[in-house]
Every structure is written in C-alpha cells, then in structure tokens.
Length: 228
Image: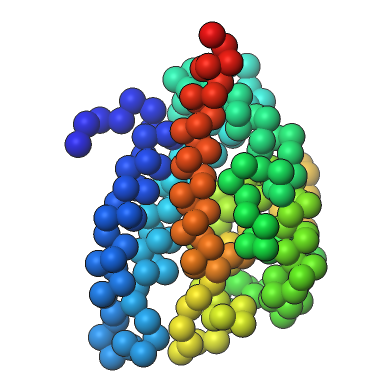
C-alpha cells in the first residue's frame, strides 16, 4: 500500500474499505464461551473508526483558528476539505451536517460530581437522557463542533462505552450501542465542569461512517469545481 499523501483524508477511505471487506469476517468471530453475546463487530467497527474520525478532526479542524501551520497540519494539503469542515463543523448544528441522519445520534450533558468515575459507571442521569427522545433532539441541535470534540476526545482518550439495546451498561448483555464520553473543563483551568456524551446504535454507526467518508470526498470535489 502506498504512503498516504493526506493522512486525514486517505486513511478514512482505506479504513472504510477494510470495513466493507472484512466486516462479514468479523461477524463470524466470537469470544470463546460468549457466543450468545454476538460477534465482535462492535469492537471491529470501533477499532477501524478511530482514525477515520480523529485524523480529519486533529489534522484539519483543530487547526482552523491558526494562521500558521501546525506541527501536524493537513490544511495546506487539503484546502477545499478544510473549508468544508470550517463551514460544517465550525458553523452549523449537527442536524444540518451532510453526514447527519435523523434519529441516530443522542446527546446528554451532566454536571460533574467529585468522585464520579466513568470506568465504574456512566451517571444514571446521562443514560436516561441518551435513551430519550429529548436526547435525540439535543443531538440534532447541538453545535457540530461540540459533537466533533466529544467524539474526538472519547476516541483519543479512552472515553468509549458499550451499551445494550436499552442503552444500559449491563455487563453480560449483548452490546448494540456505543457511547462516547468527554469532560468539559472550565476555561483557563483544569477544573472539570461537565461530562458530555453522544451515543449511537452500532447499525447506525456503520451508516454514519459511510456518510462521513462520502462527505469528506465530496467536499474536496465540490469545492474544486466551485473554484473553476
């Protein structure tokens, strides 16, 4: 395989191709003794999707406020895509994004309480909100930049959680949803203020990845045509 020229755009396409080719094989793979909990498709999608999300956000969106080139900055290799990301992730609500599908993402934000450890459990208030119609509406209305930040932070720093079909963290049940958690700190300090979560069903996450990569590709094509 050739060395990528623009990691933030080439790697998502390559990962999506691997998902298309290998997801049927992942559907045949089970943890020994836990076959009743389903195949390892959730884990496969999570592993493959991390660079698909973090590379465009880290190497394009994170630098949009800087005039100078960052030390890992793809903006000048992908100016059309960078502008599309500016228009979508920096200005729009998530529900206006081309890769958004209504009724799939949910959002919840709760105040941080000292002693809360997400490795033990997600606060009940957040799980309830994520499973509600209000959570779906909140995701549609949230800034796309906040959604991208939450997803990027979770994938980069380990804030990823499996949920069952009811949206609960019940050990020993089949995982059917993914939740992504991120802390929001008080500006200018290291004081943790809130915990933000977005969640999505596994089947919807797969469709989202298709739409995400298609948007990245189309952004460059459309912008290039508009400039001619």
